[in-house]
Amino acid sequence: MSFFRLLLISSILLSSAFGEDTRSFKEFIDASINPCQDFYEYACGKWTPQNSEATDVINDQRLENRKIIKAHYRSLHNKNIQDEHPPSKFYYLCLNSKMQPEEEILSNYLSTLLSIEPEWPYLNQTFKGSSYDKLEVAAKLRHYQVNTLFKISVQRNWKESEQNHHVLYLTHLKKPFVGPADGDEAFVYKTYVKYLLLAFGVRVRKANEYAQEVVDFEFELDNLHRDIEDVLIDPIPVEKLIEQFPGSNWKLYFDTLLSRTKIRPANRVPMVVVPHELLKKLEKLLAKTKPETIALHQLAKFLQHYQVKMDPPNWIDCIDEVNEMMPLSVANDFEQFTFDDFSPREVFNSLQDEFIDQINKTNWYSDKSKAEIINKLEDLRLHIGISDVAIQLDPEVEIEQKNFQQARMAFDKLAADNEFYQLNLYNKLASKALKPLKVNAYFKLSTNALEIPIGLLRSPLYNENSSLAQVMGSLGSIFAHELVHGLDFDGQNYDNRGNVKMDVNPKEIIEFGKRAGCFVDQYSGGKVKALNEDVADSEGLRLAYGAFEKMKDTKYKADSKFNDKQLFFLSYAQIWCQANSSSNQAINHSSHKDRVNNVVSNSEKFAEAFACSKDSPLNPVKKCQIW
Image (cartoon, rainbow, N blue to C red; front, side, top):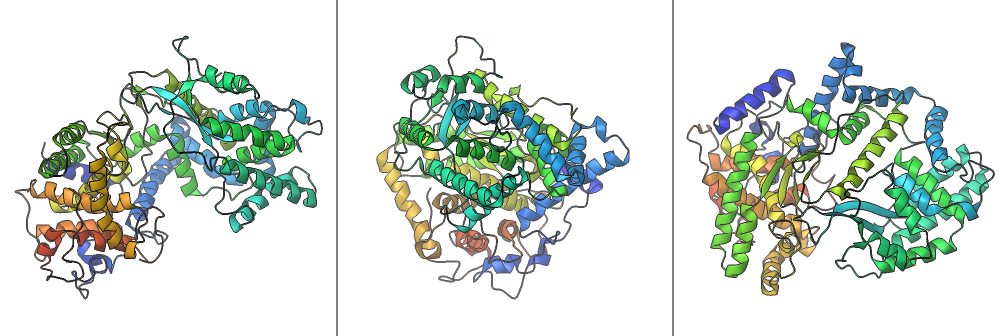
């Protein structure tokens, strides 16, 4: 089936069920602006969001995705069959929770806390610090996806990524606020802890004092990683860690943590990656801190995780909860309104071939490195809707709980069980549904894979009115951006199977750095926010354009005003249209305007397409290029 027929079928499904953005790209263009002077303002000068609360195109599409699922769940609700459909049942449990009294919501969570530890301070007058085992409590809370004292997670063993060997990673716990312990955000968090204590009957002055102690403690937990060298650490058996740190009851901690996970085969020993210096500093901190402060920290982290005493959820919050807790089910619902997954694969394959061609033409790699890189590119994988393939870890669940709080905790326990089950996997891949309503793409270095949530694959990036030029300018450039991450400053340290490379050529790293330095000079006078992202933007656009040129569609009909080259660049620029170009900048990316103007200024093809004169602002003599 042809590329465009697949596009047509998918978009008919969309437009027949829900209104997509049918506005023409021409409506957003401000023809009073010279495209060679400011292409962002030219392409986006008249753009407005479909949703008044949206700030940019990506946010606008994300809201539209939510509305699609909301309308679907409402139709089930109107037919009174939502109880037969777990995602919609969970959605309405969430939505109806705003009608519950605060005391009832708090009571539902406290009953779980009391089953974990009967003698919490401030909840029970008989609290005895000497008998309170903070590590056992930390393990039990982790069953609900709540990290306290430190962060524990399951990830691929960096030394055996190819074998899909999973191990435990123990790292420091980041504080829930930005800035110093006496800063504004710390004050907000302190106020939240104080209100919890007031709900427990603690007097105002004491509540303020205890809350400050928690803030100070969490600030110290965050600081534990300071002055610890950031290097790769070999995993060790859990039993060895227990032997090396006999001062704390780590055996009880790991036994409790893995009590819900039956390790198979029985003789397989769980492995853990942890900086020893971090544990030494943690033990010293725990020894000097009052048991009441530690217990209150753990109590507050649990209640904060479930947003107790915060604003009640609205419909967007509840859709996001379903998306987070039941991604596989939401993906199955959403897929009927989106696409046929073979056409994105054609975009991916064309980018893969073009990237290999570019590497072949690059003259600063050794023959050995070039062969390894091409091998890595040939082994690239595309995952649409799921993270990996083979074993499904997200089973369909029946929601038996009568209230949202119980259902939410049940899902967290299931998610934790799924995470720790990965310790059983060896030479097997675990399938995990990507959050389907997200409008983004990801490159996963540990599996050498491009991951695409299905929420990305719809209007305005993907519809039946798009020409090949528009698809490659928008969707193609997003895919290409992520592929470039596979060979950026971080990506070049991973091989074709996702294993960490120990033999990276230092001369090639230096050469890459020199070429990347061009972007540092180009962005805001050297004040670059995220060099890897800026490189991926420019090199991704060049990669997408190269692939597009080799994918010429014979059915393309020239626009009366714009040729296919111009449409490609307009489609790219309009990904980044924003209601206010000076607001809502991502922390780890350059501004939307820079992501257009700086990027196209590095493209000779852009200058040709819009006939930009030499030395015009977006056709400088010096252009940045890696490959």
